[in-house]
Length: 339
Image (cartoon, rainbow, N blue to C red; front, side):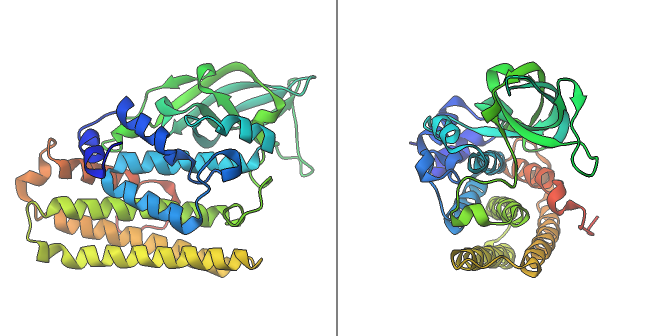
């Protein structure tokens, strides 16, 4: 098993996650933190899972991001028929990941299977996945299927990696080891039980009941906090610790607030109470404000680093590039006003 320090060393300068690190991830079942124990996963409660994500992001941005998005995709085990989920997740190397966009079609055949066709953009962890998730417009033997309002019907599917063509087109300055690539599916047939609906669940524990927007907000937010904390750690190689103490304290305080929100959510849901829309909105606003604050902090520190902050072979450059690439994710991006 690899220590946190060894994982960070393996990720420094990496443009892909090594087999050694991937095998470590599989053995620890880190990608299955949200998969119920009844399916063979770790079945973490929300607060524990959030803490894992934060600690992984502190080790390395690409590592934390890949683990967050792929474990998040494995959450869809809850949307699948239990017998299918149990069969898939009995294997330690099962890992979902994919795209949230609607990028192709799924033509339902007479036997109930689906014929998939299309291109989907930016699936984090593409080289490491056992199955790709995708959203597609439904057809019925070539004809579009429409809902009661006349809109296209959309369904989600999983496809085995062997039936997918990966398009290695990630050109961003950071998150280079995440394997965030596009992918193509060309006339691939999948069985009926390889499709699922986002808001249809076959499990009933507390994590299942968390509103998806809030789940996404808090799991992504701890990544930004973890990367920012790592950045401040690396900045201490140049600047006095006292210069960074306030920033690190604010990061710690924000993370404690995240844990408080996670606890509130779990307590409410355990008591069969809904998570109020006002709380969901409060959490999203909090996350937006924190990300804006983190960006300001990192920029303010970075301009104090001198030439070392510009050298691409320095660890802090990688953390900087990863952090600013990650903060362009659409989840909090539309509300940011710092640029």
